Image 1 (spheres, rainbow, N blue to C red):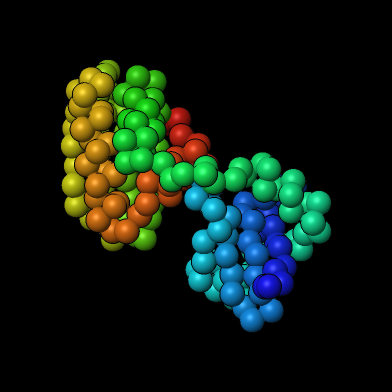
Image 2: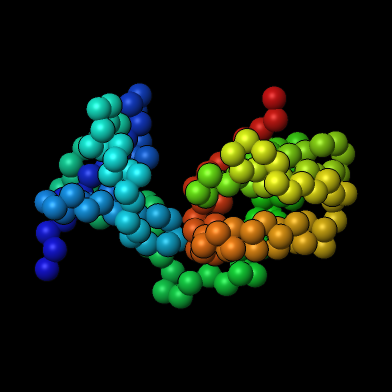
Length: 179
């Protein structure tokens, strides 16, 4: 049995705001609890925690761990389908098209973003290393948003991103209002 130490990475201005829940072994293995996904190895977070300027973090007791897990949520018993990820993403795009909001999700250096470009219009882009690799200016209709979301989900799937990771990222990152 592995003995884990549970650590909350917290906001430097609000130590009650947990930004990530990690667990690590005495051997240095680090896993992060990802919403809708579960525990995943996180070498990037391990490097930050062990780096010269680590983020603020707090070692948690068992009760605190249970409380944070309850807030983050356990992964569903069965992984979400591609259709569920497409619908979640289309809903996020719908918010952009109908209310002037925008949003984005990033995995492995590739960002999908959606931006309101006018009344009932939305631009969906995939960006890698600062370069737009795919862009679609769409007039808002349900079918068009679903087609755009399908293309984004497929692009991420080709890079090894799961539907659970996409849904988890969509539910953990708030959509930002346009300035």
